[in-house]
Length: 519
Ligand SMILES: *Cc1c(COP(=O)(O)O)cnc(C)c1O
Image 1 (tube, rainbow, N blue to C red):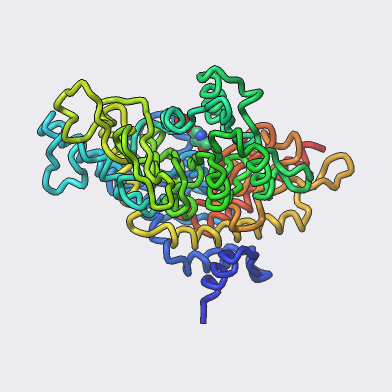
Image 2 (image 1 turned 120 degrees about the horizontal axis):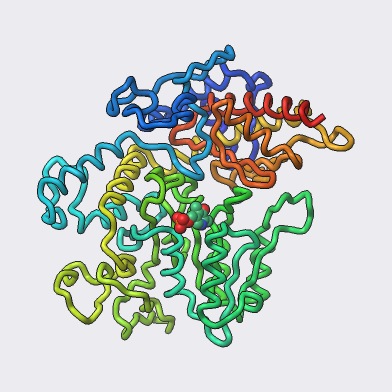
């Protein structure tokens, strides 16, 4: 028979809500879920800020959980429940959708890189020292690609490249994949992309001498206000149909950063591609968070950053996927299948020397011969320090798999949602004109299959500042988006069920206190 935990996974994976026991809102119950969690050991791989370390104003040569020493720091404190919160209590770090916690092994990988550089200098380009976890600088990006197949569902490492940063990669991909013609000139996007994506999309349209007012089509949430900014797949498909003949590119986020909605990537991709539309996905909030099968789904290209769910550190080098069908590296040729359909394409690109075939890279040839595959989109010599961080972060993913992480994620997020629903049922923090308005609403889809490890909480107007201040005081780190949204991300890699319980305790108190001050 399945354990209780296993049955929760099954229920949630089927898109349903599990029945947690009536007494599930206790710390003992949360700890019992933690005891059943087979991925609990992964937390040991991370330096999680503590309540004390979050207040740090100057470098002290120590890191949270350690005892003065920078290395070998161990973090095994648990949340105190008696209101006594010593400074080494781990914070509730629910902000891995913005900046992932630091893997301890990053220091080892960076040390290896620094020792290599210090010891053999320029030869590090072609030499990997024995015992080093790192490939030679020349091969580091490809090594990271090889370690990312499970993360994005690539058929081979040639579909993945690490280079630049997310928005830059979005531009480079659009340079190749958004080639408007008089007839097909539109980009279909959603109504509220992450600002950087909005700027990139509009500026690309303008770059081609076109105007967003005629070439940008925005998919809006379903008009029903109860739909809470939800964008139905039906709505997306019908808009694609409406603009099928005039659209060059469909560019959507795998997970919408604001609401946390996960889109049906395979269905939407297939629908658009069947209508001759190129399909790109921004996976900033999806990679390392939900299971992806980009090759199988036929996605043309995708881009992501590595500092959110991948934990490679602020501003670390970005990733990109280019489907095998675009891997031809010469403009002539192309493979024509028996049915007459062209199956291989050469894509023009903005070129630089690192996109050249590796063997030719140092021949200093004047003619650009791109490498076959996503590597052919590289422009510059990538930062080895950055790649060492990414490689370290990927090694932690190597201890598990996206399937297992997703199993835990659905239960952890489902449990957090259940606890929050409990607050709503209790009427915690109700107020407003008639005193009946709930203190918050969860605007992330209820269906576990339509979300990752994030719940977005829309607070009643005017509460954001007070509530977020109180959360910070309580050692809770979340993402705050003005005017009214708190985004909460219980990341399965290092967050515990006990943290979900602890968050709701602090949040509840914050809502109650905030309501009193409002009266
Ligand atoms: C985080 C994020 C970005 C950030 O872009 P950078 O170029 O890495 O600064 C862009 N787009 C989306 C959707 C994001 O979530």
